[in-house]
Image 1 (spheres, rainbow, N blue to C red):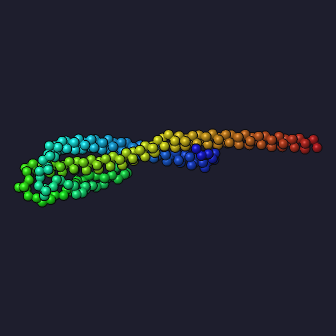
Image 2 (image 1 turned 45 degrees about the vertical axis):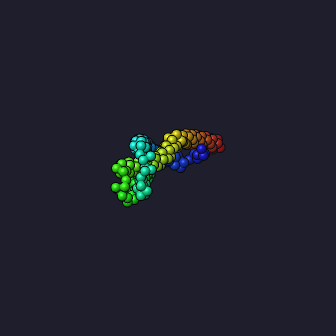
Image 3 (image 1 turned 120 degrees about the horizontal axis):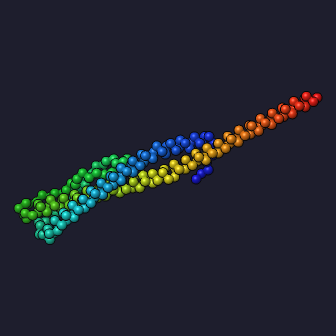
Length: 208
């Protein structure tokens, strides 16, 4: 900790710093709570999407061997692009899943088995669930990073800056109080000396 000057100006600066830290701390604590709540919600969504994807993979599994029997012009579902937007959560920008665009080749419906359309729908749902899960995981990383930074700032204010300012204020006030008391004592002593000197001079004058 840097040395603190024992002056009235420094006392004022420390008081202003303390007010500033005490004003910002509740906002940081609120932000921390909001981020914790958002993280829990995202974690629940990720868990749900992972369970959904696992269920869809189990549904697709029996069709995997049959897919080799499909005509060459009947390709399986393939993602063309993942559409996302952005949202602001507790002051940070996070991606929001909006959907998946799929490549759909034209093919002869009569040349494919009846289960082909069902397979395509399940595959598209699986791809969409995996894509949404990836976006949610990115949300989680961003929110977790921000929570870590915010928690560090809360700890810094609570455990370092505010106690440090209070201690500095206490020390400066004691020093200034001691200095003021010493000044009063010096003034009384000087007054006493002046009074005694004046009395001595008066006595000398009377004797003459």
